[in-house]
Length: 254
Length: 224
Ligand SMILES: Nc1ncnc2c1ncn2[C@@H]1O[C@H](COP(=O)(O)OP(=O)(O)O)[C@@H](O)[C@H]1O
Ligand SMILES: [Mg+2]
Image (cartoon, rainbow over the protein chains, first blue to last red):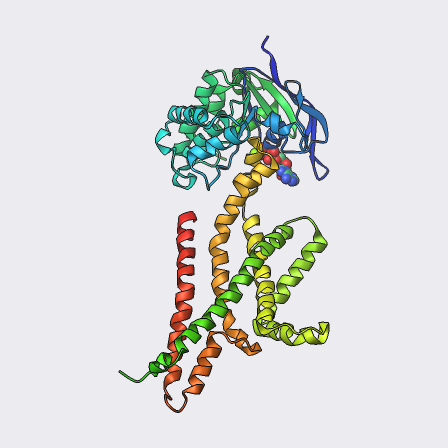
């Protein structure tokens, strides 16, 4: 049995009295890739933000190993170094070059030696095919390139777990692949990841476990095979149907 | 070549006096800028804060300064101080006070605008990387704010320099006043002097403001 890295226990989250996450439980084991799917507005981003202490929660707990994650708590700075997060919107720092975007946190937060980090950063950039962009600025990069840099920036902190919130949702279709490939590569390296995505084929390929969230609860979970091929709940089937196209001749003409 | 009466500037120390007038205008602007920039930074930061009452008064202050023509503000301070406080500031001091109040108000609005234009996700991605609040401001927010601010504040500075031409109205002998004195003194000998002298005044203002504008354009392109 692999050790548990992240534990979510009876998590309740409300916005202005409106429940968003309702008594949600989740465990992520070391090396596991958990993919979260669900309709827009069901609380996927909110869940990831709670896992990183970006949101105040109403009750329950979120833990990274033994450390409780709580918005505003004093231990957050330490814990967040172990949690890498990449958002949907490109959130690189526009005034810093690619390399300095990556170096900022390792050198200022972790106080690591600049030379060592730089070496590591360049190696990682090379892995995602962006070695030659090290001195470029974010505005000179395409959306796909920015997201790859954002992933490298998170990786360079050597986090124990990576959170991805629809990192390809804002990209042009031809750039989606290059970003997903990087994430597949990370899965191959047995990184622990929680991925929110609407790319269903990618989800099937990358996931060890898939969670379907609806109305703030985990409605169904299982292996990719179970969820995508043999979903049990009607809501899950309905949701997955949105991503299917029937052949024209099979469609009933009303 | 028509007679522009430029020869009057060669008489005595007339050109030097004109430059001295420009010097006074620049000195007043410089002192006002040096005081109003930090003041504006402070007020602008407070304007993005949570204190509603404070924000209301800052907004009121900004609107008051904006609505009042600068000349009226100059008169208010120069002539009003004696009445209200029983204290007569010199023309130059009155000018510095008015330009500082004005500069701080405009600057605070620029600072507020620059601060709120930094997207929330810049704060959040800094936090997600483990940066403390102080580090987030130091390495992420302030550098971006300053980049947006510098071209705008340079613009404000050139506006302040140009507006010093009003202070002759409260008896400060700045460049325009000197020009008038020179023209007046040579009315009979050189009746065309007005055009030439004001032409030189124009060139001098231009030479004072142009490099500053160029710097603003350059920085805008570099950081845009
Ligand atoms: N800052 C906020 N204030 C109020 N409501 C919010 C806020 N952020 C998100 N919500 C609401 O919470 C719900 C879940 O949002 P989110 O987690 O972003 O959904 P998802 O990522 O699954 O699309 C939505 O109904 C959204 O309107
Ligand atoms: Mg979302």
